[in-house]
Image (cartoon, rainbow, N blue to C red; front, top):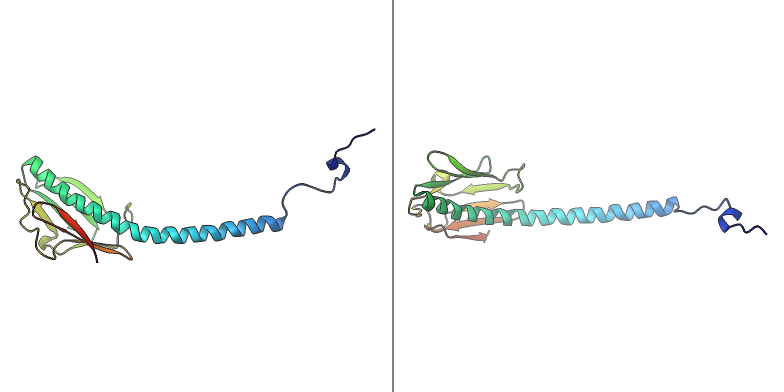
Length: 161
């Protein structure tokens, strides 16, 4: 007696998915990817200015630390055109942080309302131009804006605008 399997007895029946099933699954996957992409874009619009404002505040503190450590004046310069921050002395640039479209933190605006677009900490860690009401560095993305203000000793605070 020949014991043939079901597949051998019905050669026209094949296992697998139909074209309709595959198209349905691909359509659902495409819709889900579209929703995820929109949510991620909205998340980035909120989080980038938040992270950038915290980094700018830490750079204010870092500039003061460099001034005290080196026992010389150190400047934090804001370049609103190139969207960069630079910590520098009279002789050299210690650090540069870009915030432009090609950086990890693409901002729309990096601006300051301080004379000369820079703050300088003396060898004793004191900033003479800091601590005035309303002066600070503004960091803005497409939907959120922060003002980072700081004291003469480099303590910073950020407020959402």
